[in-house]
Length: 268
Image 1 (cartoon, rainbow, N blue to C red):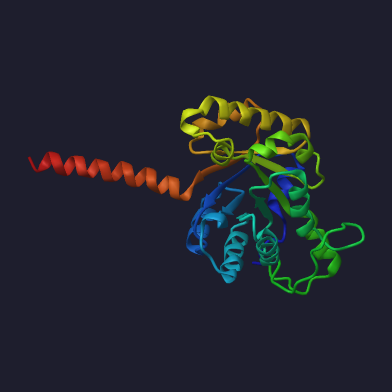
Image 2: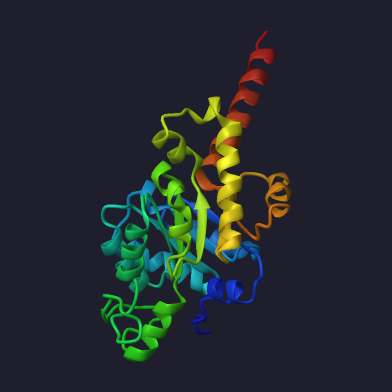
């Protein structure tokens, strides 16, 4: 059976439906297939900003997602965002999560780097012969441009300077989704999050409200199902549910402390 060439993520956004993804730190297809086999996730996000990987692994990540009807997102570093985003899109990624943009001009540049170089689109992304989605390296130029228009572009709102120009950032054409980043925001504000939780959460609520006013989808990262309702009440439809390493550490700590306690009790 041929892999679907639909950008499921974009379709769900266009239809106004909720989306659910999760963050994966490894590019190994074993984990992508495991996630896809559950049938519960619309996309897998590879957090390349945190991980090591090869360009070939980007292709394989997308292939594994496509075979299970999932979309794929990649979170790219700031400094090499153009190179990695273009390689990722050509490999089959259907969404890009851009980090660390500090003003609207940097957001515009991210969009220009991933937009087709056509008279209509005005970007600088040409026609690289790669696999694209479903192995179409020889698709027509117009089909490739159409596919680039469907790429979901998400932006982390995580710098103090970005918050100050948030209305301008959210007004940039091509911004589909935003996510507040409490850790980077705290650091760029000279704060420790653990000591300023209420203050930082208030900023997050302002980001969500402002995004909705501009017709931009706010996505929220949560670690438990119980956390979702708080954001749903604020108007959020899009969730990043869980994180591979956080889930592992949670279980490792629970099981490790538990077995140590049992061993200690049994040895008395």
